[in-house]
Every structure is written in C-alpha cells, then in structure tokens.
Image (tube, rainbow, N blue to C red):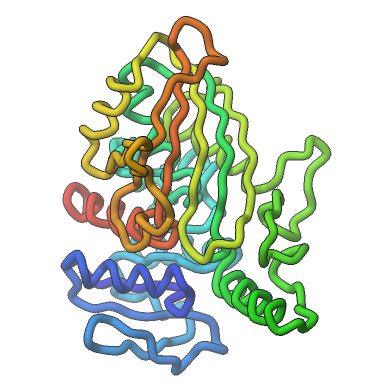
Length: 340
C-alpha cells in the first residue's frame, strides 16, 4: 500500500506515522507531506526518518491512501484531488464529517458505514472527544437503547495542537518565575485555569453552543444512526497536557444495572474497565497515556432518571492516539481488509 500523510509535522501526523509502524501496516511506500514552510524537515518513522515534502498536485500520483492530519482547509482543497488521482482519503478534520455522502466512522461502532466510501473516496474520522464517547455509548445503545446523553468534557491542551502544549508549558514556567505570560492559543490563561470554550477563539453562535459542543452533538447522532437522540454537551479545556476525560450521564430505554453495564463495556475489545473506587481504582489521563483502549470507570446509577434507566460513568482516552491517529489507522486497516 502506497501511503501519504498530509500534516506529517504536526502532533497527530507524527502519531499517525508512529502507529502505522507499530501496527505493521502494509506499506509499500510512505510520503510525509506538509506546507511549503515545513519542506525539508525530518520526521521520525521507526528507526528511520522521512524528509517532508511540500504538498503539490503531483504528490498523490500512485498513492493509494492519504491520511489528512492538517486543518480543514487543507482537506477541502486536497482530498478531492486525491480522489481524482484514484486514491482514498482518511480525513481527521471536520471538513467532511457531516457530508451525507461521506461516512463518519469509528470502526468498532459503525464499521459497516465504510461501504459508502466510494461515493467521494473520502472517509471522515470524528472529533477526538466524540470517538471516546461513542465507543462507550455503543454497547449500551445495543443493549438497552439510549434516549438521552449529557456529557461534560475535560480536554487536554494537546487538543489545540502544538501551540496549546507550548502555551501551557510557557505559562506555568512564567507564573512560577513571577513573569507576565502571553496568551496566544487560548482566549484566557490556561495555566491553573479551566476554560469552557472550545475552540478558544471561534465566535459562539446565538444559542451559546460552542463549535466543539456542536461537533459532538451532530457526530454522535450520525455515528449511532440516531438523528433524534437528545444530546447535551459542555466542553471544557483543562490544564493537562494530554488525555481527554468525560463525565457521561445516559437515560436508557430500559433499566440496566451498573453490573450489566460494566459487563457490556468489558466485552468490547477497545474498552478497558477500571472501576473499584473503594480501592482507589478509576481511570485517569495518566493511565490513558499511550493506551490504545478507551478507559471507563465510576459506573453507577444516575438517580435523576426514574425506573433504573439512568447510568453515569467516567470515560478517559489518549486524545492524540486513540482519539485521532489510531482511529484513522483502524479505518485504513478496515478499508484494506475489505475494499482496497
């Protein structure tokens, strides 16, 4: 398989390269692509390095599969060019997620949707926070039906890219050294603070729902094929470098005990249950770092829902790995197995 990664110098692009190597993806060749300013940069690939090339129309000649790990504007321009050249794009940006002719896929949840990739030869991968949410919701939805979801996220600064990581590090250092610190990536200081606005500088619509919150609502409905599902979301940026956490409350169609919910979660190969609070066992972002599975704990009854139909739980995932690069690679593996 001849593969290219657009956005290879970014945190998700680098993680994608690492996972392709780690999982033994069948590579005949691999190109690292980025903007003109990154041309000539070296990026690690196993024990080797790849020299980054600038993206050009001829970049996709003879390429079977392209991972887009850059901004949405990049995907909009180049993914159709990939299709014209005969390749398939797996796009991490939000550009095509809600396009009815583009499948939005988490393979273990709605892998059957990949059958529709040929319409535009593009497959979209969801927002990182959506991925870990639907991984947890899917087994409950199959078991008891979900009527309503309320989720609050606690999202690491790495979700804002390299700039977010650098800003938190710089602000912590500046504060401890009694220096004034710049605010660039976020709209307020992130160090020792909590910001309920993601993306930080995008305009907020009249209804008050941020862009990240709208993505999670719309994407969850599309992936679960439940357009009428009631979803409420509050997305919050926290001063953690990597790893997203979510407090999830669900209203089910029928009663389901926490024990049965844990069993449903444990049966999923990409979920790991860590749930014994009395012994201090519950998942944290430290546990999730570098972990391919999404972690679940604090499973309990939500008494605000009658008839035993309410559950609450805690979901944690490595947003750069499981929430971005790994899902894209799993999509590619499924495409190779059945269609390419």
